[in-house]
Image (cartoon, rainbow, N blue to C red; front, side, top):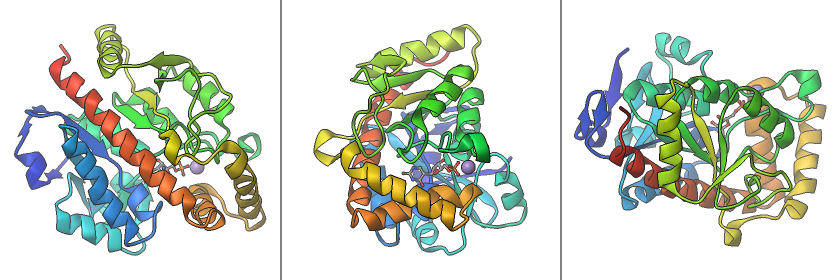
Length: 307
Ligand code: PSU
Ligand code: MN
């Protein structure tokens, strides 16, 4: 498949890998997670955090039918301003490409593209997971199955708190995905740094995360891993504060008949309104924090290449 690289990525590309550590970044967060112009500003700031942390950022998106790994500044602006952008995952990314359309990549689609380009580490806000009420709707994000299949390390602030986190943890365990909380014993819950759900694994060092990964690969185990990185305490919204707003947004989604791909963007924008913008500030802080840790992990992966 034809992949277009940004000038910055092309300069360090030495197929099948890179001469510097690289961190992939998703684009659904830009088009479906935040309003313009904050989305563009945040996209640049997150890329800068990756650079300041010693790695090279590769924001991934489909622009007019072409899969881009790394976006030049004008392409980033084009995407941030674009209307009617498709939200693409494993099921529909290549079809949207065939139609020549523009698509923002979810965690699942970004993992696929990152792996195709030879990128091992990816930073996002929160992964998709098992939605509350999934026993009736069967709404389980394709992100979970992607973690089972595609060998990319995903750094996220846990699963979004709008989800059913215990069920999400069960599915990840069934799929054999290592879930490693960074620096604490409990799972973070996106806007909140902690939750009452204990983390299956804990690590305090990027090097240790990389050795765990290399050991998995040496054993021939496929798939990715989830690094659950808590939002900095100073930026968090406590579970007590955000809990009732999540409940209200979920109730509205159900009563307005919001389903499928529209659920996550609807809930995020309602919670933005209900918290008077505070949820967005927290979201931005946690994405930057994840970009920083992802750069550290990318550096240690670069220092300890896969044999
Ligand atoms: N995290 C955010 N904002 C987002 C998303 C995650 O802070 O917009 C996106 C990611 O791209 C994730 C997607 O893959 O939501 C999950 O959507 P769904 O629940 O429809 O699978
Ligand atoms: Mn879904």
